[in-house]
Amino acid sequence: MTLRTYKGIAPKLGAGVYIDASSVLVGDIELAADVSIWPLVAARGDVNYIRIGARTNIQDGSVLHLSRPSKGKPAGSPLIIGEDVTVGHKVMLHGCTLGNRILIGMGAIVMDDVIVEDDVIIGAGSLVPPGKRLASGYLYVGSPAKQARALTEAEFAFLKESAVNYVQLKDEYLAEV
Ligand SMILES: CC(C)(COP(=O)(O)OP(=O)(O)OC[C@H]1O[C@@H](n2cnc3c(N)ncnc32)[C@H](O)[C@@H]1OP(=O)(O)O)[C@@H](O)C(=O)NCCC(=O)NCCS
Image (cartoon, rainbow, N blue to C red; front, side, top):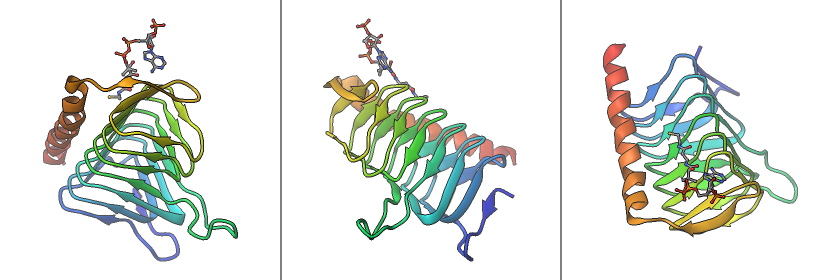
């Protein structure tokens, strides 16, 4: 079963959402219109919530989770992902907040309370430690991730293009089922 309830709360899906049958989404998760979830994604909205903005794609094998509220942090760390975000293969997103038009490279790890501003690329295999803020318009790479350089005009364009490509791809997959 791909969509599961936790404490009676089931994931909510916007129009045109595509979810591969091998993925598992549990609990308090909301996907906006045209989001795509690719094979073997695990997303668990149990001790906090997950929100994913329109046209964002979460690629194969990625893991999405969050942190529960605590005494020192009453809201805990939900996972909030903006619009037109590309989350590459086998990415770990945990309790962080991502803006719009972001590329998270394959195998990257983004930890609790990280804020990624709009229009950012995080290189493949990077690790973003808890609580860091990544500034809009830059490439970050490494473990721990450091600001490498400003994005080029082509990369700004690519961020939007990548989301459009994935919306087209998921429409083709939706037509298969
Ligand atoms: C970082 C990235 C954007 C390339 O940036 P770039 O500035 O064009 O980098 P270059 O290829 O010119 O390499 C510049 C240097 O960074 C290094 N580098 C490239 N990618 C890196 C990465 N992910 N982490 C650490 N270092 C990296 C290169 O080895 C090179 O090092 P050198 O100068 O010592 O030789 C790209 O490698 C990347 O990670 N893209 C993510 C793609 C992805 O995962 N997409 C999602 C799946 S669809």
